[in-house]
Image (tube, rainbow, N blue to C red; front, side, top):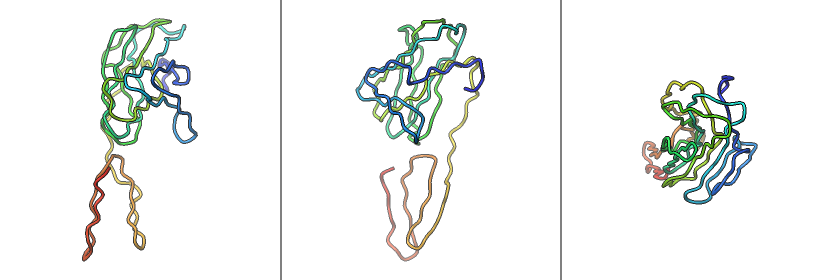
Amino acid sequence: METPANVVLPIRECTLDGFRLDASEYRADNALATAPGGAIMAKVPATVAGPFHAGFILYDTGGREAVALEINGKRRGLAVGNFDDNNQHLFFLSQAVEVKAGDEVRLRLVGSEGRCRIEDLVLLRDKPAPRRPLYEFRHVAAHENRLTWITTWTAQCTVEVDGAKPIIEDQP
């Protein structure tokens, strides 16, 4: 995103229909879905033209988020967020599309089950290299009667201690 050739379409400047702006000091500004079939619209700025990989940042929470990406009313792609890891993911078109000033970039929910949170929309001059999800345990700690950790993905767990009844957390 930091490459000067890329263009960020800030969520604060988008038109929201079936979404509401959720500004917080704890996470990036985002639009939170409030209705099925909601849409987010942005106009390509006057200074922008050429081939771009249109995309957006999704904060992936529990449940499947399905988001169609349209340019000037034509569906160009469908992104499905199902990592359920409470993390940001960049989705973008695999093929560049020609855009010019005033073109409309629209995201539309299609059959989403989760609390869909969209951060900024983006126009990427070059397609980024794919990154695999990071799976790790962090901040593992044991105290008198407490075992804590943070994972980078939603997890169910069972803790077994010698001679004690297993503790089962079946809800991620």
